[in-house]
Image 1: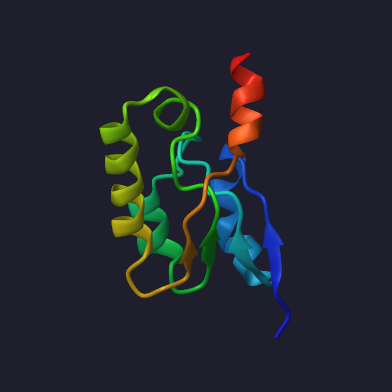
Image 2: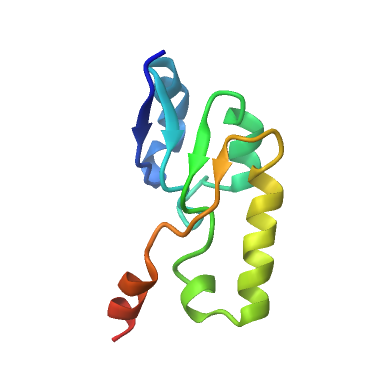
Length: 104
């Protein structure tokens, strides 16, 4: 089996079926703030064909600016939406060092 991984941006949502057809098996990162990148819908539509690796947490608002409770709720929500049946790895799509540099 050929396994490829692909980094999506919002313009690629409509291309996901084509990416699966040509052998892409992993999307990284899952950019939840991008158009049409709703984790519940992604899992429903493509969860049997793709693994979702990285991202899956709002790195533009919640992770850098949210309260600890908001971050906890965001992480739990994404795990609840992506984890059933496997095929996901939860991690931020941006490192904490990068967030620090962006904020300074």
